[in-house]
Length: 190
Picture (cartoon, one colour):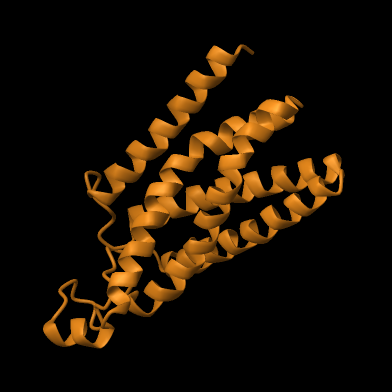
């Protein structure tokens, strides 16, 4: 495969994922009128997958700094698979579940003055964290795909150059994914 093909493939996958997330976020495709009962498990599953990926990324770093390339590669393949599973679960959840607003205690999708007061300044922290999480998650996908490809092809120098950026961003995204879940989970009403 040529670099040109790989770059086009990575761009296509990244754009496709971005478009799907936007379509679901804007509710262009109507969700089912009845939320399936398993839907309420998906955010917790997503947090578990993100947390597991965070740990695996650190284990992967440990192995590569010890020169254990095969273990590093296996851990990264597992991390990539779990992140892919996360992405599917995330998309599925945002298709099925109604929107959840931080601080909405009664689940009516409207924040009253009292609900805003109860949430306090943590709302600002939550939205800054969520915004950075979303932007970096969208931006890191092509870096992950390219660095994953370069690593599998044993293009070590190109892999290292990409991972210098991809690793900290991916780790940030997986860790903040867990924090975002812990902060928003009290407000799920489905």
